[in-house]
Image 1 (spheres, rainbow, N blue to C red):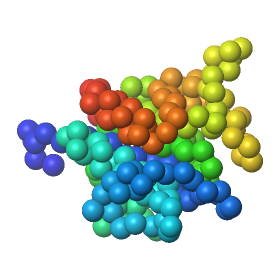
Image 2 (image 1 turned 120 degrees about the horizontal axis):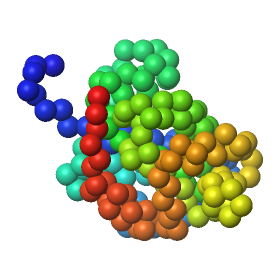
Image 3 (image 1 turned 90 degrees about the horizontal axis):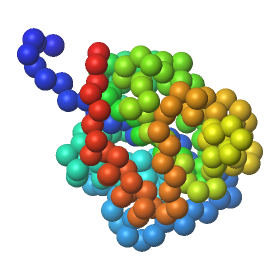
Length: 197
């Protein structure tokens, strides 16, 4: 990259791709209608979590915050491995912040893989307490009054290691419904912490 060229960091919206089998998400028609034109819809008949991630990235773009999801960056991919692709994006975009979307009823397998990658790099820019924001829906977890850590409690998944998200100081923003989530994401997106590389 040429000297003196300013690189604007991108927000990478990570999270689940699909709903768990037999789970029926309740997404309002207004939110469904707001899916971005640049994203090819995946879910049928209800938007999948990947569609909602595209919606969140679009809401950030409308706030003049560059944002994307991995699935929209396929043209940048050179690694045949998902891990390699994720790590490529950290450098090629470059990623400045991470917004981890975790709705109730989603299959979080990919997210449960991405979190350890971020925890392992905690403290090394761009992965700092100021740059990693986790957005769990009510019912996915809650603050443990004894430990002070956020406990992911949704049934069916081992969540012991997810305590490290709190231990690393990553920011956690609970939400109740999709309009509230979009407002929180927009508000958090407006604050752009300095990114040192």
